[in-house]
Length: 114
Length: 112
Image 1 (spheres, chains in turn blue, orange):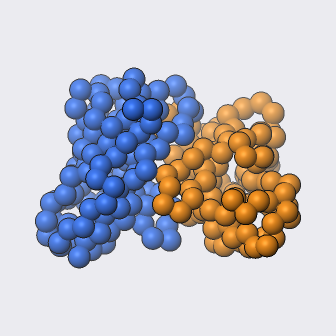
Image 2 (image 1 turned 180 degrees about the vertical axis):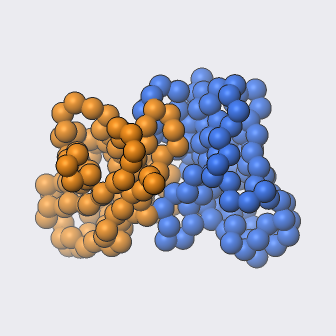
């Protein structure tokens, strides 16, 4: 596709369940970022993948959150034992890895934990 | 610590009036600065960015922003607002390919 895609667009789950959120970056983009946008808040960085380097996980809020990126392309963000405070919009972004080149955000996944 | 402050949570302007959205940042390295817009139910769209050089940058949709190093500011401006500009605006700072640090956003309402 032409842009970053994310699935599902909406996810409703029960507290304590695990969820997986998917991000398909733009083909050829080596950098991939996950952010979280909570109601009334800005975007909070979660995790960053750059090529084959070890990911920067410094933004993950707890060990219930994890992410992987397979084959340098698709990424999956997993949240285990979801809590109500995990409810947010999860945004994925990719970039070609050139310094400062940004701007390619996906539409987001709205997660609601009941 | 790296941070971005957008002092105005919500601004209302009349259609046709000028607009200025404020952004102040704190960043240790030479910053790259960005403004994004998010319309309801939409993803983030890049309006403009500053890396170096001319401190007045032009973006899409008639927006511009001015980098003022002495004030650590990167305010967004538009001379004449259109109703379609109603949205949430986010200022962000980063460097290289590092993850961006975002402000909490300013919601813009446009009235007739």
